[in-house]
Structure formats: structure tokens, C-alpha cells
Length: 302
Image (cartoon, rainbow, N blue to C red; front, side, top):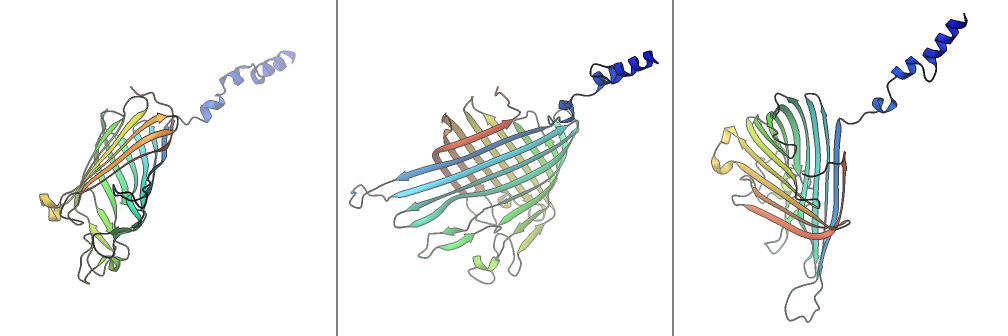
């Protein structure tokens, strides 16, 4: 009996065999399958000019904000990538009032299954829109040309992804149905027969079922204190496949830390979308401000 009690205490005690075989608590709370990053910034630019300044110009104050959050899950052959990319900028100029200068709302989620070391099969859903109303100031009276969900592009893409490195991805989607939304279409019409962003009068949405999409993304560190983020998006409708109607969009964001949280930020967008305008559209902004970055786990740039 004494030997049996001694054996039981040896197995169940703090130093026993069963205690040693128990998995450590850290293994039960393992979150290493997730990789997350956060970037948030506020930039300010200003100019002050007196009323009698003979060099011309006007007093102005501009403010821009940016936010980029990413969460990536990888376990075995399965991956799940999520991104929220927001940008908003505006400027007040004496004599003109407040005007928006930049606006972007991008949401993207993608599930992938690994086929080889560099290729995945994937399905994704993304939305591209803007937050606030936008106006055309070329006439005597400002004219509303865009707003929240007007337009908004929601694309459900299926295809194959090429990922040679963790910094660059290329999605090839031969089947990518897209829904174009124009909330309150009548607000943007000059005539009742006007087609707005491809949406016919009397409707609020347009489906393009037989369509294709190409999406390339680059997130490249430029040394320890700078980063270049680029995203190129191509979309075409098989039913109206003409070179002039293929949509192209390129977004560039360059951030560089000067000291601590102080940073310089440059954003640029080049857009060609036939349903919006027959010409090339371009916008860019440069600012100095505060930039907060967080990354988990921490990856040292090479």
C-alpha cells in the first residue's frame, strides 16, 4: 500500500511524469499564425499670406489623414488576408472655403489555398469607394460629382495568385463579377437620360458578371525608416472588351519617418476609367505630420 501511494504521488505531483507531459500554457495560447500591421498618420500643411501681399496667393490650411490596417493568417496550405486602406484630405483656402483634395476607402478580404511554393488558388471580395461628397469647381456653381457609395465598386474575384515574396503579390482573376453602386443617382444627372458611372437612369446599381480583374500589390521597405506601398488594379468587362474601356488604377503611398513620430508622406493616384471620364485622372498630395506604425510579429527589413 505504501509503495502504491508513493507511485501515485510521483505521477500526479508537481515533478511527476504526468505533470511533465502536460503541454505548456504558451502552446495553448499560440497566435503565431497571425501577422498584423497598423499604420495611422495625420499630416498638416499651411500657408499664411497678408491681404496686401503683392506676390499673390491666399492663406490656406490643409489636413490629411491615412489609415492602413492588415491582418494575415497562414496555417499550412490555407491563408486569409485582410486589409483596410483609408485616406482623406481637405484644404481650407481663404476666398474659396473648404474643399476636399483626396478621398479613398478600400476594403479587401481574400482566402487562399496553396498550390505550390509561389502559387495559390483564391477567392476574394473587395470594395472601393470614398467617404465624403466631391465637387467639380470648374463652373460658376460647384457641381456634385461623387459621394459615399456613389460610386462604389464591389468585386468578387476568383483565380490564381502569384506570390514570389512576402512583399509582392499578383492576383489573376479570369472571373471577377463586379457590382457598381451609385446611391442617389439623380443627384449627379444633368438630364434625366444621363448614364452615371455606367449605371442607367432609374437604377442604383449595375452588374458586370462576365469580367476579369488583375490586382498587383507591393509593400516594400526602403531602409529602416521609409516604406513604399503600391497597388495596381485592372478591370475589364468581356461583353464590352475594347482597349479604351479597360479600367486602370494605380495608388502609391510613400512614407518616411524623420524623427520619432514625425514623418513625411506622399500619396498619388493615377486613374483611367472610361465610365467616369475619357481622359486620364491624376491626384497627389504631400504632407508633414505624425505617423504611428505597429507590426506583430516585428519583422526586420532586409
